[in-house]
Amino acid sequence: MKKDIVLKINGEEREVTVESRQTLLDVLRNHLGLTGTKEGCGNGNCGTCTVLIDGKAVSSCLIFAVETEGHEILTIEGLAQPGKIHPVQKAFIEEGAIQCGFCSPGMILTAKAFLDTNPHPTEAEARQAIAGNLCRCTGYDKIVRAILKVGAKTL
Image (cartoon, helix red, strand yellow):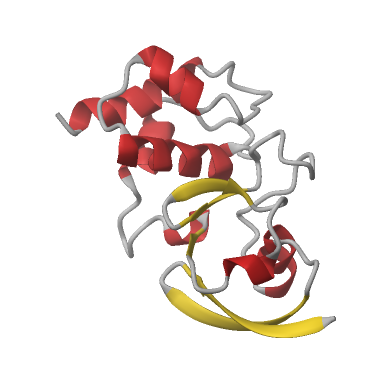
């Protein structure tokens, strides 16, 4: 069954017609052209499709788009401000935490949500925060350093 919904994505309301069982991931990528959100495993185990819903990191492959109506959705495309990248993005670049880039959007959004609730994490806390995000390139050390770098700057 098709349904017209209004999603608030990256601060902007977007009207879209969706199937009732269509995932947010599918709607973002295939209806709205927001391809920064990637599909990895399709079952919520890799973190590649992570977006923020009301500030919380969520696997967009596990939630129906119709369930997100009335909530604030942030994708990687909405993280930076015009002319200025977000501090988490900057730290990932500076620390070499972006290799192939496939996991980076989900990893960055997960890190942002984590740092919003724990701005001064320990290394162990940072590692635990990204435990649900898989990266096959970096070995996680550079990602953890980037997270800790942002946390150190908020002191």
